[in-house]
Length: 295
Image (cartoon, rainbow, N blue to C red):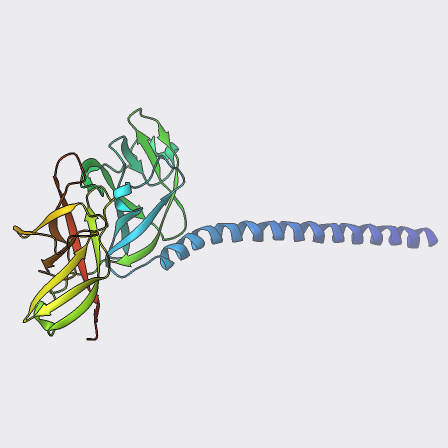
């Protein structure tokens, strides 16, 4: 009887050990399955969340385009930006590159770009204009944008036929202002004002003073333009030649203002070189900065 009791105790102890081990094994398995399930559920959800956060109202925007390489970037004439178009919730950015050396892009990894049936992004020819007025033809691409701010894969192939992986991102979209009616210059009453202006063109060495003075007389608006150099002997605006209004110091001209908020082409003739040279510029007068000068 005693032996039976001892035997029963051993069997009971063994059973308890087996039960405990099974419970522990079951717990590890459950934990592993949970982790795997979470991983499978999180990755697509995270991607979808990023895409959801990136949605913008349909329209056209300027946006910054960043890459992980100094050899692959948008053209310097574009100030690091491209044109982002949103249509039916789908985002595409058009970028102008630095040359025609990049032949194709692929929204994904290089290894997938090389597979049969891969849909590659083909270039179009863009003409970019530099600050000195020169132009160049380069390759441009329309790149699908899955989300903003966060990086995504974009592979490229050059003239040598080798594919490379890159990470890119698109951020800081700004709506492109729709064309607004030109402000009526006669809205300004007679008097003296100041207005901010920007100038582009030339070599970039010469500048004009901003803000500039505006004089309004019976609806006629005249701006006093002061150059950063004394070497301009005349300006041409809308086919009319204007001479300096001063004899000492930097060259100053009084020219008509024909429009606000859009570039107006002017010519400045400089005598700083070995012979006089006409240089084309554009000047934009920004109407939202107009301030009346108290007399």
